[in-house]
Each structure stands twice: as C-alpha cells, then as structure tokens.
Image (tube, each protein chain N blue to C red):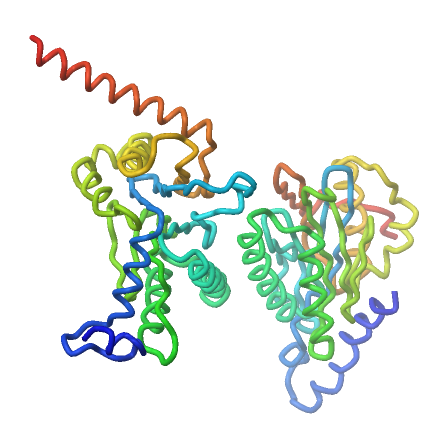
Length: 235
Length: 251
C-alpha cells in the first residue's frame, strides 16, 4: 500500500519548480510516465489483465492510446506503470531472458520465473528505477497466476492485483466486488468496471480500456472505447 | 615432420597446413552422421542415433537443437564442444533481438558461429572446436536456408548436405537425387533426407532422428510412429522399383 502512495507523490512533487527555473512549460521537463491504472485477476484457466491508455509528460498527454499490456513471452504479459522508459527497458530485458530460458529448457517458461526476473531487475536497481509492474500469465504447472512487483522490488503472488496512480481510488471497489471462481467474462466485466472508476477519478489515467485474457489456448485482446466504457454516478 | 608442427595450433607447418584444424576435421569424420535438406517451404534435419546402452535414457542424447524459434542446428563431432557453441549462439540470437529488434537471419548466425570457430584457430593455448554444424531455418522474410560450418571457421550455403561419418556417401546420394521437384514438395524433402541417411545407417526408426521446420512454425521432431510411416513408404517405393526392374528385364 505504502509503495503505491509513494508513486502518487513523486509524480506531482518536483515539477512545480522546474518551470520557473527553465522558463518553459512544465511538460518539457517532466518525466514521461504511464500515470496509469493497471490490474490483473486470476480465474480458473487463466488471467485477465487490464490497463488504461494514457501516457503523460507532466500534464501533456503524450500518447492517449498507449498499450501498457506488454508480452514478454507467448503466455506471459506484464502491466506497466511508472516511468515509461524504465518499464519498456525492463520488459525488453525480461523478454530477452525468458526467450533464452525457454529455448534452453525446451518448454514455455513458468510465470513465476518471469516474475522473478522482473523482481531481480527492479530490486537490484531500485535506486535508479521507477517501475510498478504486474505480471500475469498462464503456465502448465500452476495455471493462471498474477504476481505484483511494486516500486521497491518486492514480489508477491495475489489472486487480484491493482497498481498505478489510479489504483488508490479503487481499492474499496476491488475489495468489495472481487470473488474467487469468476468466469472469464465476469473477470472482463470486473476489470472494465474497476478501470473505468479509476480512470474517472485519476487525472493521470484515461483514454481507452485495454483488456486481455491469457489462457492455455492463447491471448484474447479487447479494447473498450468512448461510450462503451462503463458509467457510474457522475454527479 | 608433421609432429613438430601440431603442438601449438597457431603455428603453420612448412607446407602451409594448420594441423590442429585438420585433426579437428578428423574428429568430425568420426562423429555420427547428420544430414540437412532445404526445400521450398520446409527444412529438414536428420541425424544418426548411435546405439545406446540399455540402462541409458534415450531422451538425454539430443543432437538436433533449437537456437531460436526459427533456427535449428544439427552437428557431427564432439558433443561437449557443441554444447558450448550452441549456448553462445543462443545468447547471440536473443542479444540480436534485443538490440536490433529483429530475429537473426540464418546468414548472420552462421557467420557468428563460423567467426567464433575461426577465433579458436588463431589463439594461444586453445584448440579448435571439433564439430561441423548444419544450420537450418527461415529468415524473417520467409526464405529457407541451410548452411554448413566446419572447424576451420568456413561456412557455405547448401541445398542439401551431410556431415560426420560417411558424409561423402550421403552427399553423393543427395547429389544424385536432389531435384527442384523434390524441393517443392514437403513430403519428398523429408523422404530424401531419410533415404540419404538410410544409405549409411542401419535400417530402423530407432536409429534415426528427424526434425522438420516449416515457415512460421516451430521445429517439429518427428515421432517414432511418423518415422516408421515414412520408412514404410520408402520401403514400398523400393519394392515397386524392384518389381518394375524385374518386369522390364523379363519382358
């Protein structure tokens, strides 16, 4: 919990002074971050992962249709939050290691292995990185699994994980609406609702809702745009 | 005279030989046969499986290896040397993907392996790798390739080739029977590789290992049943040939 609150502070804090010093608009100096709302849910037979699509540089939206659901192997994805550059670099390196490992052992890698590779990088370089990652995937041994690797490089498996600046607004919704044993369609709906609520309240999250289901049979991707995004009480 | 010039391999003999490299090629000739065939839409690798001890687990003797999703290789010679080369090649395949964001081309990875082998023919205190590799696969643009490297570090592209024990016999068979029609058909290419291998290997599905790779598909090791089926077809064709010959002779 504390790790997630930290991420909210670091985005807002340093930027106010730079505009005055450099005499230019704040987005020119602000780091490019995936402000973000991301989540992943385990269900029998796989996982459903989801993310918003906003990449910001200060208050400028650098990309409003970002894909934050990045594959590192055929049945293992990661949801990226924090610095866009850091998370892209980390995902590329983990992808390198999982591909090599998979060819070496002659079978698809375990989700836990990929999660540990993320954790090793994030922990070893914790002082230099700002990366909150959720790993979701399917393997033969344990089926669908979700692993959370927040800012400091901790690793923990959870049935449902949320992350990014938008996640703070939806802990209550997730805690009250998650139940074990959901079907794939129920998970899609649960993720869509959660992300819609997070995107509504968090300024750093928005755009479209990207969802993906990872099962033994493959990847099913969905995009929810505009009016199809679930609506709740909007005041 | 030769014994004075094969101690340190960095030394040329007076008549221009690198004896260590030639001895390495001898080691390759002692290894079990490997054959490769390049078709239009398929590449095939076949290896001779040496008879193993009763208590030994068959599956741990693997002479056809994946280097990347789209590149496979078979080798003849010192298996332990091969393991090292394969590991270095696998790392290079992934490293290439990370830096250049594209999978390796067959030519690139063959050149890498050949360069590595050459380096060991020109350094102090190191001996050359005692293996010859047959590297097959499809480039990103879909073209199939078959390359061969040898302990000296040279590499060439081939339509079909063999290495290891009795490679000359197998190559002659391939030269006689490789045609563009064979290359156009997946089934014929597989049969050609198997028939070529059977020239020097004892007949029996237990003594050969076959692997095929089709464009955009992962490497597939043929099961014992599948090999037996193709062998039965080959046997039938042989019988039909023999029957025809008999008929033309008597009539």
